[in-house]
Length: 87
Image (cartoon, rainbow, N blue to C red; front, side, top):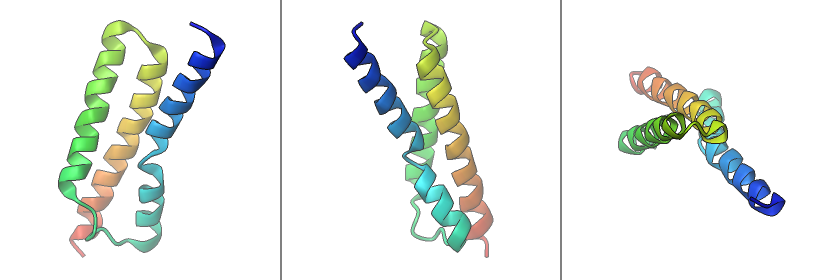
């Protein structure tokens, strides 16, 4: 695999991992979750779980690390959705 391919792969992984991070930060600041779709959060969680499982099965550390972090972010956002939705 050439260097450009690796760089693009790592950049894609970093962006995909951080995709939900701005929403988590906004939720922490505003404590407003009524405009967040629970179904979208569940799909994101399932997506991260499946990619993490795939990474583990093929022993691809970049896939494992990025999707583990993305899964943590999705869990945090789901927790915030339930926590602030009840107020």
